[in-house]
Picture 1: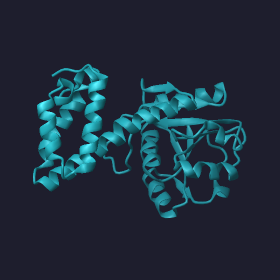
Picture 2: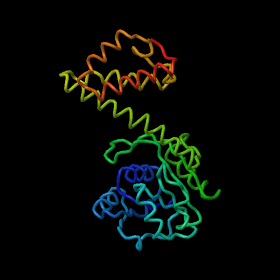
Picture 3: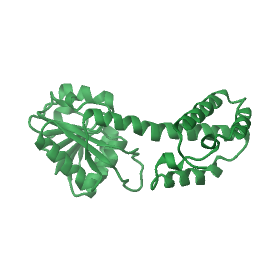
Picture 4: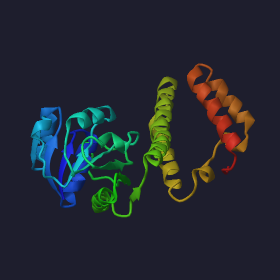
Length: 257
C-alpha cells in the first residue's frame, strides 16, 4: 500500500518503520515540526511537508499518528474524498474524521511506543472503519505488520481497553516510581527489585494475575502489614496507597501465598 503518515513522534516513527519493513511505500511524512518530519522522512526514504495544502492526494491510506488534541484540528482542514483516513487514538471517536472523507476509521496500537526503540516491538492492533471497505483496508494493513494480533474494536471497546492499559501500564509504572523514591530516601538499592518485577511480569504470561498474587495482604498477615505501615509513617502518601492496595487485594480474594 501507499501510505501518508501524519506525525513525527513515537507512534508515527514506530509505525512508519513497521510499514516499511512490511514492504509498504511511505509516500510522505506530514508534521508541524519541519525538522522532525524531515528526519523521519530521511529514515524512511521519503519526503516530508508541514503544510496540509501539500499533502499527496493519491495514497491508499492516511494514518494520523498525532496527539489526540491535534486530530480535530486536522479534520477541520483536510479534505481527502473517498480516501481511507484513520487516526491512532484510543479515546477519540472515529467519527471526528467524517468531514475529511466518507472512508474513515481508527488504527489503534495497544503498546507503549518510543521512537528510539532499537528493535520493532510486537504491537496488538485494533481497527474500526466507517464502512466495510474501510475496515477491510485497515485490517489488511494491520495484518501485514502484526499477524495474529489484530482485532476489530468499536469506539466504546477501544476506550475500555485504554482504561485497562492505563491501569496496567501507567499506574503500575507509577508504583515502580514510588518504590524507587522510597528506596532512595531509605538508602536501599531499587535495582535489587528488578528481578522480582521481571518474574511477576513473566508469571502472568501463563496464569491469571489474581492467581499470581502473593504477599502479606493476600495472606491476611496483619503482623507484617503493621510493621510495614510503621515504616511508612514518614511517607504518608505511600502509606495511604499501601493501605488502599492492601484493602483492595483482600477484598478481591484469590491468589496464593
